[in-house]
Image: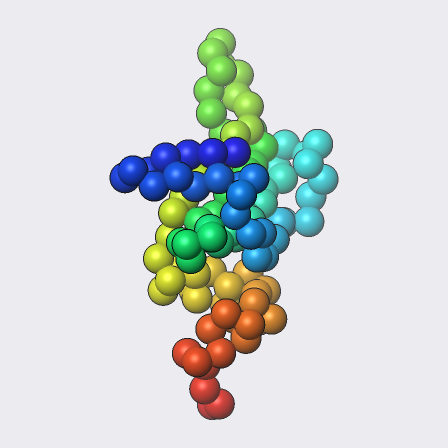
Length: 104
């Protein structure tokens, strides 16, 4: 999937998939939800959101019917840190942000 935001291209085909999260439901389940974190070759971060028709990714397709969808959301480094902390990305945090972590 590819999206252009503020003159920048975010493309899942050319970016590095860094972390995958999903709610444990099959992609055939209407309540399936996933968030995949990517990093572009130039170091920009984005999330590919995907979900079924019974999630926040639902879009109307007419006549009171809904379908799932996908979208790309560019995010800041601070949002990447927060996302990884709340979505099981400890290994990724240590790999990309070791300089920002400290012992408690």
